[in-house]
Amino acid sequence: MLSYSSCRLCPRQCGVDRTAGQLGYCRMPARLSAARAMVHYWEEPVISGSFGSGAVFFSGCTLGCAFCQNEPISHGGLGKEITADRLREIFETLIDDGCQNINLVTPTQFLPTIIEALEPKLPVPVVYNCGGYERVEILRELEGKVDVYLPDYKYADAALAGKLSAAPNYPEIARAAILEMLRQTGPCEIVDGELRRGTLVRHLVLPGYVENSLAAVEWLAEVAVKHGAMVSIMGQYVPMPGLQPPLDRHVTEEEYAAVLSWAQLCGLRDGFFQDLESASTTYIPDFSLQGL
Image 1 (cartoon, rainbow, N blue to C red):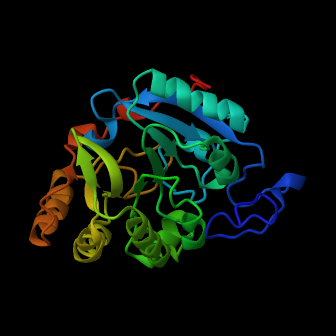
Image 2 (cartoon, rainbow, N blue to C red):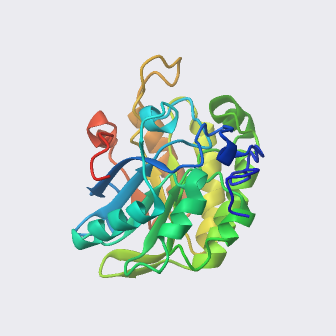
């Protein structure tokens, strides 16, 4: 099932033969491409730990959000072609540098190659860091290979998902994916402040779309948390050039406070909540191909 020919790795199921040079929605060939490998300290504390997360940022994306902060690599084509053997060497170098996990950032479009690089099992947890738009059938192929799932739950509003990510089926797809992730990992296991196993779901508050966030938080509280998930509510939205209102501005204090208040009313007291000071380009990695 994990194949570049007749590619159906993501919910778009383009069916193109990437081995023959055909390109689907992600615009990526069958050869893995990455834009940066680094010791990453800007994830949630249980992911970054004391010595950093070993993050590898892969090129391409299966969503294509209008507000993407990583546009140069998600759809700009930036990246360096590397083999499965070289990817394995990168993982091992990051571990030697003290990283407490290997963090696969936006990996879906290159899973056949990544799976090859993950064998044999690494001595640290593997984190699957994704947008939440994942096929349950593909996730089942990862069971036993991924220790921590770090998905987004971007939209509870199907119309908004269609408008901003061309994925009106996002809410149903993401909910099913998150439940599958939780089935695999069970409740979160934190040892010495590090998430060793479990599912941590992120939600980014968008300016002007508080109702979407309220609905997303409600589902997370009523369903995901009760199945053992942790939740991270993020206020780090940074407007990129050329966006139309309301995405052309930062989230206001009133908007973010409304979401956090609703989270508390829904019973979300244990988790992660950002300060709005995190809404800065300072925290966007420099995709310089360094570490590859």
